[in-house]
Length: 287
Image 1 (cartoon, rainbow, N blue to C red):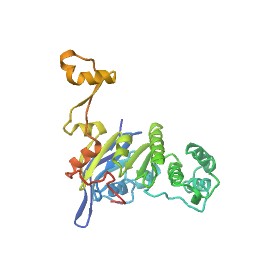
Image 2: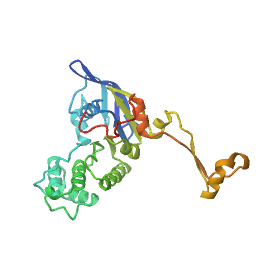
Image 3: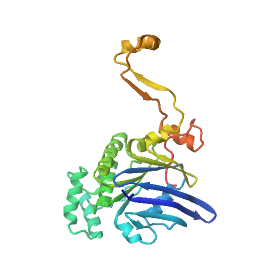
Image 4: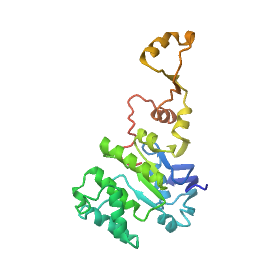
């Protein structure tokens, strides 16, 4: 299957500063891809190029089979971008925000589509309230619903859970998983390592403009030295006895799983930083 996003040797410079230095990766259709990197790594620059907001200095990138430089209009027709902060019109109601986007996209039935997304995102009861009365979680859901008007093939989510409380963050995770299960390809940037680990099918770590590692969360963890294994026993009594007698008496083990490092350990090791004193919230704003 051809990837829905294909990036090869992508390069971008601002004056003498090389922000992207030969970035390459592919994203399969219907998957969740997470781009991780420290502040200034080049993530936002990569997203801007892929969403046709900036031109590369070298390399190629295509989305939905269209080159971002040669066919920008076609690329825009198959993507949608949700930024770090909800871009809703606070004076308009939730319904009016959605219908406005539908009209701008010249959809044949914007009212019908708006109602469908209101239901999907559990916003029906608040549909006719002004968006300024919405909670942070409701605004974020409305923002993503607006991005999905027209059903884009690829959805860029830049820091989708920034500012949300834990409950709304978990709800957003389920929403993102549901979108991917329905066939939407998700390109995610996030400051939360746990978020990438929970959501992403594949992760790329961008450091100083270079992809230094990529793969599934498990594959990235396996690149690190393992720290032993977890043994799971049938009951507490057996576990206590087995601590000293397992080898001699052959106590049964219900499960054996590798004690892999966390994604935080992998990230910090890959970029050569010490774990002490470093937050997993890598970015506070943009690149």
